[in-house]
Image (cartoon, rainbow, N blue to C red; front, side, top):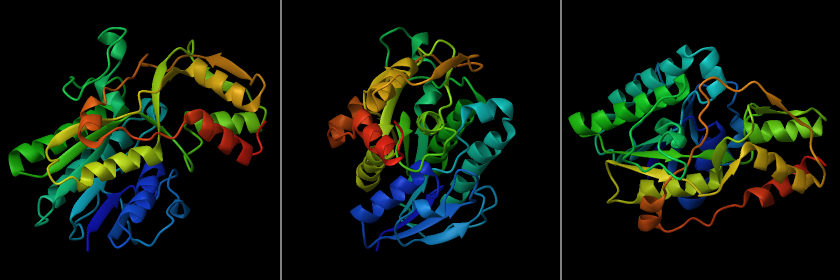
Amino acid sequence: MTKIVVTGGMGFIGSHFVNKLNKRLPNSEITVIDKMTYSANINNVKCDFNFIKEDICNLTELPNCDYIVHFAAESHVDNSIENGRPFVRTNVEGTFNLVELAKNIKGLKKFIHISTDEVYGDMDYYGSDSVAEETFNLIGSSYYSATKAASDLIVQSAGRTFGLPYVITRTCNNFGENQHEEKMIPKIIKNIKNDIPIPVYGDGNQVREWIHADDNAEAIINIMLSEDTINEVFNIGSGYRITNNQLINLVSEVVDRKVKFEYVEDRLGHDRRYALNITKYNSKFGKIDYINLKEWLSKIITKNEVG
C-alpha cells in the first residue's frame, strides 16, 4: 500500500490534491497534517484519511510513508506585508522542521515541496516577453515570496547535503472550488453577489497566469509517481495569462453586465507580471487538458446565483 503524508491538506490546493489523489490511488493510505487555520476546512476533503491536527513547526515525528507532499504555508501576500513573522515561522521554520524529520524516514521515495511562481519575482525585470524558467534566480518581492524562496533552498540543500529525495513544484495563480474569500476570484464573486465594488490594485494591468487547482494537483501526482523524477524543479502553469482588468471584463461577460469595480492604492512591492515556462513539464508528462477559467466561472457564478 502506498502511504502519502500531505501537509496543509485541509487548505485550498491541498484538499484538491487529496481528493484527486484518492481517485488516482484509491487504495493508498493518506495522512493529512494540518493545524486548521482560518483558511482550512475539513469538509473540503471528500475521502477517507488519517488526520493529525498539528502545526508543522511543532511536529516531533512523521508517520512512515513513501511520499511527503508539503502544501502547508502562509500564502496571502497582503498578510505578509502587514505582518511577516507568521510567514517566517511557517514557511521557513516549518519547512526546516519537516525536512529534518523526513531525513529520518527510511525508504522515503520523495519529498515534494509546493512552491510558487512568485519566487522568480517580476518578469518585467527581465523584459516584456520573458517567462520564468526553472533555472532563473530567486527574487523576493514580499515576505511571502521571500519565505517561499527560502523554503525552496532549504529543501534543495537537504537534497544536496543529506541525500533527501525531493522535487519542487512552482505554480501560478490557482482557482477553483473552496478557495478562501480573501483571494481574488472568490472576492470578485462575493462582491458581485453583495453588489459591492471589486477593489483592483493600482491600474489593474498586472498580469497573472491562472490554473485550476485540480489541474495543478494532477500535475503534482504525475511528478510524484514518476520514478525517474528526482531532485528537480518543475514549473506548473497553463500559459493562460491575463491582466486583472481583463479578469474583471471576463467576469462581466459571464454575468452579462458591467460589474462594479474601483481602483485602489497599489500593493507595496507589487510585481507587474508573472509568467511560467512549462516546457520542462510538458516535454516529460504531456500537456494538461486544462479546465477553462471562463467556463468554470460561468458554472460557479450560476451556482452562487450571481448575475
